[in-house]
Image 1 (tube, rainbow, N blue to C red):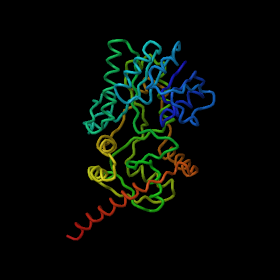
Image 2: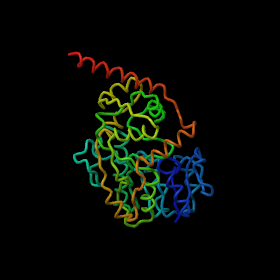
Image 3: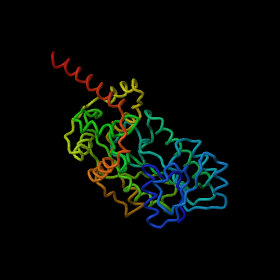
Image 4: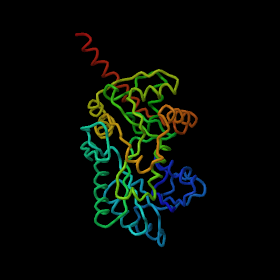
Length: 342
């Protein structure tokens, strides 16, 4: 099978690229070449900006693909561009949407593909839902062979997933853990969350390639394991060999306080991580019977923590976020002191 990935070197797509290459697919990536270290030797890379439609049209002239997947399309102009580029030259177009587009807050915590797409708190999610609607219209009216894939919180060995972080990723949270400093957890830490390792996501995704039954369908791909945010942070701390010092903070307070530091937490919290969601993966398992997520979170995060500790270049300090956490800690202690003294 001839596969074209737009991007191919991000958190989700790196694992897909590696697995497709391992399985012997005829794989081509189209990207700007900024992460060439993540591309296996022998994989063809077309270096171009997909937004330069004229150049990409010339580079793809005469070529056809069994499947094209775009990992960097986020709004209507992007999918309209892809429609112009790939209609007629691919048997399947896969749009990477997001499970965050599902209804927030959910009426039912068990999420299926029929759960409404309605997230008033996050523009990113709303744009993904609008793209889905437009693409499905192209499928119904023009026969454009679209498959929609909705990942949830997917992680890799280069990053540790946490509930809240600053502009430079999660290292500062790991550092605070090792220092015994309070680590912010939204709410009371009891809401359930699903984390999926990128290698598990790749299994389900690859099973959709060239899958006739996936055309015109939307499907999410996640692990079946759900953990509370407290459990997630405790597991991370355990891998660091320390005890978690949790700082529970209401999400609306984090959103309000974050604005002072330039953080926009509303979408990621009220529109996503603050809500308990349990994904029903029956549909992807019907489409890809061999799919099963096999990486437990404690196993995946052990790999990630070990990898980050062994690679200093991944340890990006974030003093601004550290100061934000300290300020929140002081504020919460003052609140508790007020009521403790009454």
